[in-house]
Image (cartoon, rainbow, N blue to C red; front, top):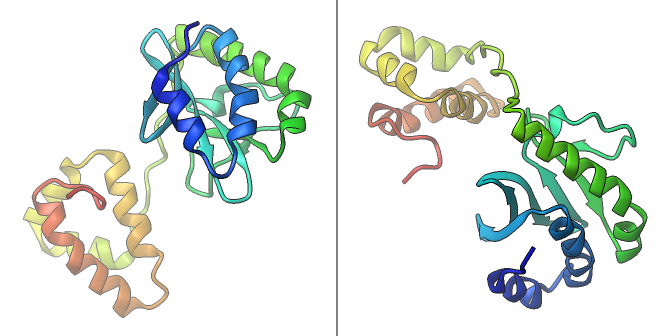
Length: 193
């Protein structure tokens, strides 16, 4: 597959992991993936569908598989992005040697990820979230807010729940609900402008 000049530029500007990305890139391209910059980072797709994305973190470089939860992971190298991640899984690299050592695994996982995409497999829906008490109380007493909240995507609903429930004190949770209410009423997610 041809290289993308935008990805060339991205790697040349990298301060943290340019050598590791340069070592990982040919593996991704040999898998027949198309590279482009999405979300300000190199992203690799097949047939217009996102397969994996490169993530530069402070302590490591990651190759994140969008539907990693559907991969078998016989080598046990995939990890969750975080406690609230349902479908994405990533492989960490801290050196060019890591990339070389894991190259066969990466190739196999990329092939499986393409197969998953071609088969049309999808990660199942998230389980229903039992909303934090302060948010549920506010929705119960404000039908317009409840209707607007129910009109949000499940991901946006979950994001509001997580944001409110992360506060340790009830007063802070209530304040967060009040602060979020105007955005909910206009159908926006927590991070939408």
